[in-house]
Image 1 (cartoon, protein in one colour):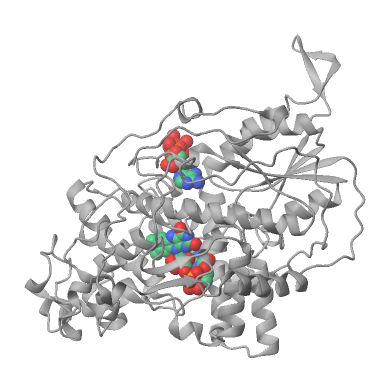
Image 2 (spheres, rainbow, N blue to C red; image 1 turned 120 degrees about the vertical axis):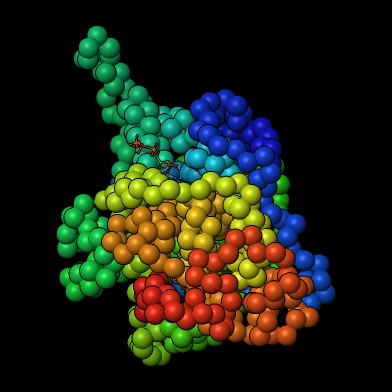
Amino acid sequence: MAISLFTTLPFLSPTTTIFTLSTILTNSTTRYHFSTITMNSTTTTTSAASSSSLQHVPEQDSNEMERFANVTFQRYTSNSTKRNGNGTAIVWFRNDLRVLDNEALYKAWLSSQTILPVYCVDPRLFATTYHFGFQKTGALRAQFLVECLADLRKNLMNRGLNLLIQLGKPEDVIPSLAKAYGAHTVYAQKETCSEELNVERSVSRCLQQVGEPSDESVGGARSLNNHPKLEFVWGTTMYHRDDLPFDVTCLPDVYTQFRKTVEAKCAVRSSIKLPASLGPPAPVEDWGSIPSMEQLGLCSQNVSKGMKFVGGETAGLSRIYDYFWKKDLLKVYKETRNGMLGSDYSTKFSPWLASGSLSPRLIHDEVKRYENERQANSSTYWVLFELIWRDYFRFLSVKYGNSLFHIGGPRNVQRNWSQDKKLFESWRDGCTGYPLIDANMKELSTTGFMSNRGRQIVCSFLVRDMGIDWRMGAEWFETCLLDYDPCSNYGNWTYGSGVGNDPREDRYFSVPKQAQTYDPEGEYVAYWLPQLLTIPREKRNFPGSLYIRQVVPLKFGTTGRNNKEETSLGGARRRYDRRWNRN
Ligand SMILES: Cc1cc2nc3c(=O)[nH]c(=O)nc-3n(C[C@H](O)[C@H](O)[C@H](O)COP(=O)(O)OP(=O)(O)OC[C@H]3O[C@@H](n4cnc5c(N)ncnc54)[C@H](O)[C@@H]3O)c2cc1C
Ligand SMILES: Nc1ncnc2c1ncn2[C@@H]1O[C@H](COP(=O)(O)OP(=O)(O)OP(=O)(O)O)[C@@H](O)[C@H]1O
């Protein structure tokens, strides 16, 4: 899809900058191009059986969402802290697009008299992925982001602030704003992967150029006094980095060790309660508009089937309300979490967590409240168990740096990988001839979401049955996923491809076995591949010549039942499956 010029939004006069993609993106990193890569927006079916089955997540209308969210806003608000700062502080919003439990916002409020909240629409996020030239942010995630920004602005306005939205690189935007408004500090959430760390370094460097010239000269050049400080806060994980019982560079390599140690030795902090009023805002003439898809260089993609996630903190809080309190699903999460169809088998918190519209600590607080007010059982614990996986991948990215993205992974495993374009495209487009793979891939490109079960199966199929370079899969997920997060995505891909730091290498997911266990009636595959609806239920996952040709044989046999090779390898395969199941 062609990326058009970035059109200019009405900027503030002191910092007005006109950007075009060609000026901003001077160093394209694309090394490999597929001629036919597009978001697969035409894969949705128009059959009567499926076209009416769009499900909003959360399912409430906007008034109801507002009501639910307001209750939560009130619960996590406190007016007991006294503000004692001076001047202006900037909050540079990144992947923390929320008001509740936002430490950067809280610190900015405490340390200032006025706050300038800013979001920079960084054009690099709308360029291409590193190796294979896919869109870095697909249309569905971009739409979700746009919704998050609109909602953040609304929630900030409800607290007496606003959100300044600027198109441009943070290292260009933030220092010039700091200068124009005489800000003493810029607060932002700390990130951990190199793309984000490079931006942090650039912002820091450029902020040092802002300030009053001093009388001293350094190396012949005049130095600057009082340049604005850049202060980062840690906010991405449930367990705070500073509370870990080990230095993050000594993180245990095996998840279970990590989990047991943190569970035994540290506590999750309560979420931070902000005051009801955070104003006044800095005096801004024009706060800028929420970018349109065209301004982002993308074509809108409508979700016509499956789940349509609504972006923003209000929607995220409503989903907590819906899943925990209204439908009371938290108490059965452990039994349902391996599902694939519909919205209720798992929490669906991930898109809001990835954008920072929900804080993991707030979810933790709500789980604890549920345990006190309703019941505590293995399901209520299991949501926290899964959130610890998320923490683990985040901390791993600190320990292992860029090796998380390298083909050999953190352990630098040497293996021959194929980059066969045709095979990859059949996987990407959901045309492999295996209904379970194809249905999952169609769900991903149509909605931006895929269940955890589905992700594990399609990952195993790509790397084990097709032998394809796992980074191609990871980059395609990077394009499509609403919940894309570099640590969880690349962490899970390295893990599933046997190049992760966990020493167990061979995680094979047998497609027939998975189909029998998790979609025995073929409901999931028939939902996404309606041509299978006419086939008897038990055959939908094994349709033979009634479906398209299989592009590769399976490593351990192609049928679900009565397969000799499978039977003989069943024990080994069950072990592989168990390892992946993790419970
Ligand atoms: C190949 C692959 C790629 C993935 N890429 C991402 C990604 O980019 N972003 C992302 O958030 N998750 C990713 N996951 C993890 C997981 O699939 C999703 O977090 C989960 O499916 C989201 O649905 P949910 O919110 O309903 O999860 P639930 O089952 O309700 O779990 C609750 C929360 O726990 C966390 N969680 C659960 N499982 C994992 C896991 N394996 N790793 C990390 N966190 C987990 C998520 O934050 C999730 O929202 C990936 C998994 C695989 C196998
Ligand atoms: N947020 C992110 N999302 C996706 N990919 C990321 C992110 N942050 C870093 N990366 C990836 O990290 C890698 C960094 O590039 P590269 O491996 O060339 O750097 P490097 O570690 O300096 O290389 P080397 O040290 O081997 O010379 C790229 O693959 C890049 O896409």
